[in-house]
Amino acid sequence: MHYDPIKDKIGGIVKKSPFLRKIFYKILGLMFLREWYVKRKIRSLYGKHAPDDILDAGCGFGQYSYFMAKKFPSANLLSVDVKVDYLEDCKYFFDKTGIKNTHFEYADLNQIDFDNRFDFVLSVDVMEHIEDDIGVFKRFYKALKPGGRVLINTPSSLGGSDAHSENDDSFIGEHVRLGYSEEDISAKLKEAGFKVESFEYTYGKWGSRYWRLGIKYPMLMLNKSQLFFIILPFYYFFTIWWTLLFMRLDVNEKNKPAGTGVLVVGIKL
Image 1 (spheres, helix red, strand yellow):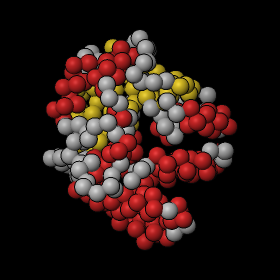
Image 2 (image 1 turned 45 degrees about the vertical axis):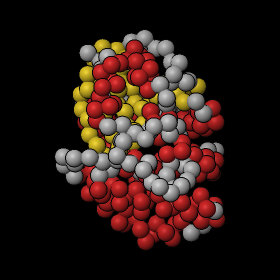
Image 3 (image 1 turned 90 degrees about the vertical axis):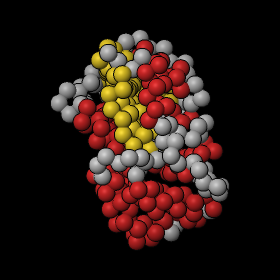
């Protein structure tokens, strides 16, 4: 099962309509559990004191850049990615909506070379695609000012994106590693110079149910045929209530011993 072709198809539908793109962002924010976790963590880190300079490292469709640009209007955001078409679509949308505090640039995270520039680096579902993760962590460390933080969201080694599936129904073919354990990612961040400020597993038992019902099964259908776009609204009409319930239960579950996602914050002292 492949995720990127479906993302690209949806992105192509909304890219020239700011109105549709805003709706698209709202749908992503509603339907993707990782956004619930990431946005909650950003609010908890910077609820009262907004960071001055932010790097969105692997901005993709730009939904997190949009969230942070609106939440932190006084901040300066640099959003980078290796996909030029995504960047051009983001530039078009941000220009049309009058958002001036965000700039989009092409950059390979293996080659970025910033020095004490940012207060906050965000990396969402990126590190599983990068072979030299320690090298990138070191570049994040160098890019941050003293006291700056990096927030990383990525699959865990406990089955993120159905990594241990015996069938051809996972997204792991797009990844260079199965995921991270707490010990693994903490050790690598420490090697890069960071102090691990917080760690949590996401996508526990309820998140796994949400993933299958809300994301995996629809993606499987769309990989079979894009004609399933027609019946997708009807599918979600019957399943959305359970999907949202599972998401709410997952983010409210305290002290999960494990999960298929990882959310970690490192700080440069």
